[in-house]
Image (cartoon, rainbow, N blue to C red; front, side):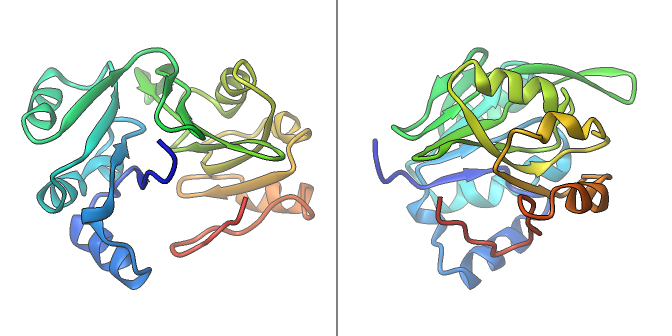
Length: 197
């Protein structure tokens, strides 16, 4: 399963997603898998555009996604409902469904762990279950050395101390504090950021 092309989340606007992919020289027809972190519109809205372009997709969602959405996806792609950790390729695994809270309601989210020579890099959507909970789940599968993505309202920065790479993005409210506390470990994120890990 080496060499799989995996997209993590799709943003809310599929047209913007396809434009960005084109600018980066990425063809949606070459995708093998899409992993959706959680069922908020700004993470799944572009899925229909990807489904229209690819005939060989496997889509991974948390088990807690709505039954109607899971049914719609399964009619257009191979569908995998994630509950516990799932291997997606030789070097990428879902950490499984992790429970959190958003605006007083339960929410379930998955993150992925990418194996590298220096440890696992965890990629997150919004981290509604808490960065500390996600890192703990990652550590149960192997040593986590970095994290990339949205940390939402997370501010327990001591949980990041042992990491070598920290890339806060998207909804992270404490970006400035993270960058000040970890100047040698943190990096700015943005569309088109390429990491060789």
